[in-house]
Length: 156
Image (cartoon, rainbow, N blue to C red; front, side, top):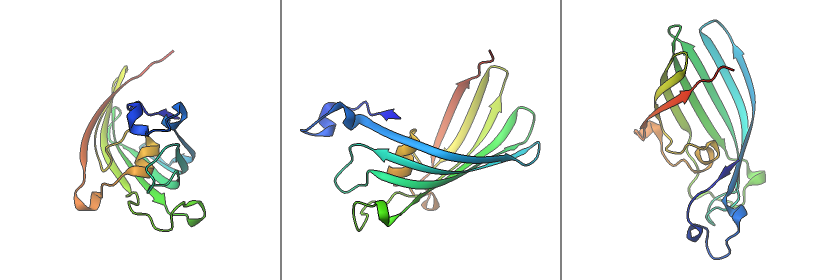
């Protein structure tokens, strides 16, 4: 679940706090094939409470992800998300801004306390529901963006 932190003005005249909510859920099937290769396939569902009148509230999608370990501390990771056009849940007969597929690839280095990722992706959003529903960047046309994350690893 996500909560949009933009100003109330963004949501229009009939603003309610619940307009800020968005949701994402997925069913993941994953397998570690070898000591160095793991693959994951996921079916997902996204919902955004308040959208522009020309956009959809709901979207199903499929995501493929994986990790190829290149050393004990580093891996190459990838992600490919495909938003599905399912007419049974569409609110509009023609989508004016159909979301684009998302592609990302990165390099990950882990230490005992942190995980560092450097990646290239066709999405500028962080929330998976916005990636699946609003991504307008086409990676086949060079719409790629550079990113970097640091994650603190805890061992209790």
